[in-house]
Length: 309
Image (cartoon, rainbow, N blue to C red; front, side, top):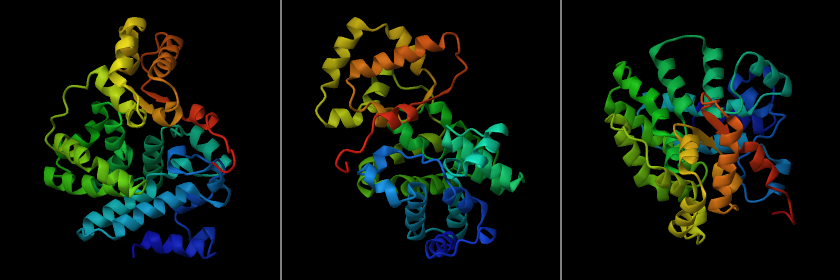
């Protein structure tokens, strides 16, 4: 069993001596502010007796534990997984101090990478690889969903260009890492996106992520669940072109990372979703430097507990 799973097992058994806990576990279990992706739970009632971040990290580690990987890969990926969600943890006091120190708390992959670097302090090749994998963790799945532009994967390509990993080594890390991250949400989801994940990894390791997808393709991906439920996307998109200034929509989406979009807006029509985008675009004015737009606060206001659901 992975040493991190042993630590979690001891914590769950009541051995909660903070002095013996590593920083990553202390941060996760001390979370006072619940940061939850509501797509990962069946009902709000589940949250009453749960630490959803710890539960998710534990699931990802169990998946890693069961994979047939060389020791160095498993050791490295374990370190990536235990740090990848820490920016969702910490006490209110911790989070205030982090914010003061410039830790990005609303973009969790970036914030977690910053906290890892703050804790380790070294710049060894191994820590650079781990830091990069924490920073980019989950982005392949989010690119498939239309939330993340291709350029966000550039740090992975730099690992090869800087001779820290070969293409084969990077491929051999990215596939099991994404299996842990995605299957940790749902095994069914992992099997449904496996081919796309493999294709994207090949584009990354061959440095062929050149042209960003067209706006229509990215919108299609952002509406994946809604289309599965029966939305006629092509017909709705055709109507949209008659009513919406496409250049403003392009300006909003071009090169930006969008967080929790589908979780927040899945009950909205395509037209309503695009109008939300345009409201944000016009409200930003000339603030083109904004790269991350999070719908997490909106997601949180869209869910309430009705008869346990």
